[in-house]
Length: 131
Image 1 (tube, one colour):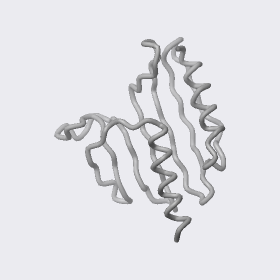
Image 2 (image 1 turned 120 degrees about the horizontal axis):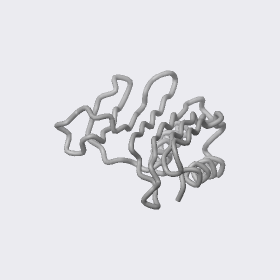
Image 3 (image 1 turned 60 degrees about the horizontal axis):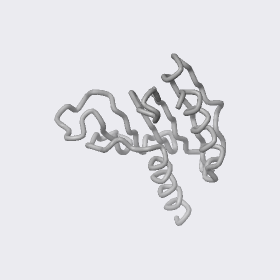
Image 4 (image 1 turned 90 degrees about the vertical axis):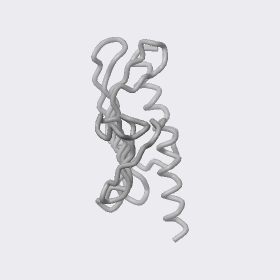
């Protein structure tokens, strides 16, 4: 799998996701045949948005996230952010962790897939729909 294949796959997934209202033009930067940067901001029906930021290596035939951050914001307040910035070395999942709520309280977390991130956002959107 080349990095271009990965970028095309992510963009196809975003186009097929029915919970997405609008995707700003994704930024892709190819470093070489197997490494690159993918960045996009995805907007939902209630005005909330998810920022996707990944540096990916596909040399092993599958995507390996070297650096990632997935930030979900509603009403200008952080709801959650997953990332692998190397702070919180005491967490059992180091360097992977999640920041929760407007105060961005950090907690251990396994590295999520983009599908898991969208499921979490969709659960939040469904809860809003019930209010």
